[in-house]
Image (cartoon, rainbow, N blue to C red; front, side, top):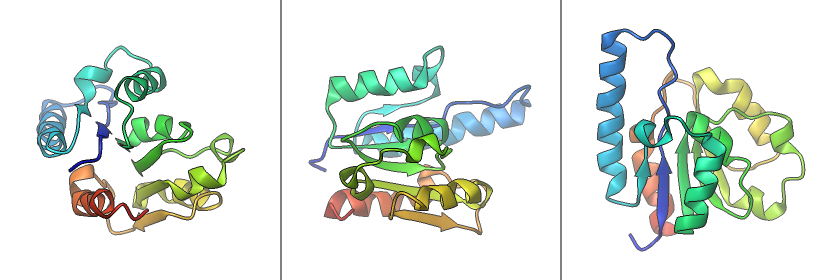
Length: 159
C-alpha cells in the first residue's frame, strides 16, 4: 500500500500472568506484528515497555509523519488524544475529557471498533464521533479479527 501507516499494538498489562497467558500474548502479538509489518512500521510491547505510551506515540508520529495510525487498547486510548491525525482505533478507553473540543475534522478521520467488554466506551465514543462499530459477540476483539476491515479502509480511503 502507498499510505504510510503506523501500528501500535497493545502492551502486556496482566498482573501476575500465568505462563499460558504470557505465551498466548507473545504468539498473538508476533502474528499481528508480522501481518501489520507488511503495511507499515509496527510497535509492540517490547517497544512500548518502560515508555509513557502517549509520549512514545507522539514521538513516532512526528518522526514518521504517517497518513494514518492504527492502535489497540491502551495505545488506542492514548491515540484518541492526537489531533489532525487519521486514526483507526481498537477498544480505546473513552473518557469525557476525550470528547471535549473535538473538531469536525477529527470526527471525520477517526474510526473505532469495540468488543462487548467496551460497551460503555463505545456509547461515549458515539456521542462525539460518527464512525464507531460494536462487535457484541466478541469479548476480546483483536487487530487480526478486523484486519480485513482495516485493509479495506486503508485501500479505499473511505473513512
